[in-house]
Length: 365
Image 1 (spheres, rainbow, N blue to C red):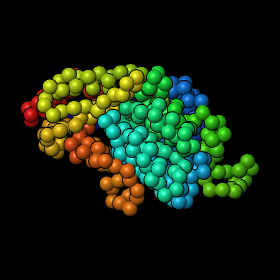
Image 2: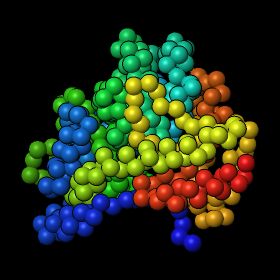
Image 3: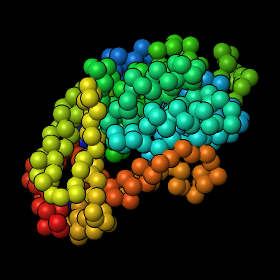
Image 4: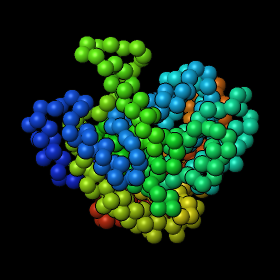
């Protein structure tokens, strides 16, 4: 049987053509026309004013912290219910994370965020929020808190490209934001990311740092530490082709979610990640909570049929790496991790494949 993957790449058909153009131009390195075009296409789609294409979204978060002046022993608030790439850059800067738990939205709790700010040993300088599984956070409340407290807001929109709140795209509410183009994302360049902001100087600084902080000399002159973080022209060519079909990919993922919801919601104890009012998620992954069951039973049953599924993210405050760090939690994300599962959600799944997954789950229950 062909394997049904969790979220495989879904090519548009134009990628090979654009890659051929890159090879014909011989601009294989981290510069070239497609890098510029990819940045412009992301800006045009999202409404972000400025962008720089990078090797990963984690690189973007690292640059954001550098540009915003986050340094050794500074405190950075962060969603605990996320992937480690959302928060590892805090350690790159030798800063200290403070993890904040989720609420009923599964995303970061504004109420617990307020408590975390009050209980921090020193005033936090920044907050990194994750728009989990393509669903946006409670942005009105979070933006207001950050403005009131004078805290930089960085959006980890790695999973939420194409998601919106009140008609505005995720990644355009904070001071800076990142998108991911990793192999399993809704749009993939095999690996890569994009840092965006409304502040031109910050993006120009990030671009400078991403190219080894080389000064404007013919020879190589360096006054500060930089990084090799720029995206190659080859990967950008893939990204340009992917951006041309992003709208279709979002709609198909939402269709798959609705198929799952209609088919499985009648099973007692099963619920789905909610979509907050006035938002439209990209449903990157369809995620379910099994109130009365061990998700490993479902994972094992699907695996027997060559179908990939996974637990929800293990919260950062539960990770051994962060066992000494501060966390304001109430058990919400731990419950979700212990009882949650990600179902196959690739935009190239057929209805028959989605139905097959549903039937296996129905048989279990």
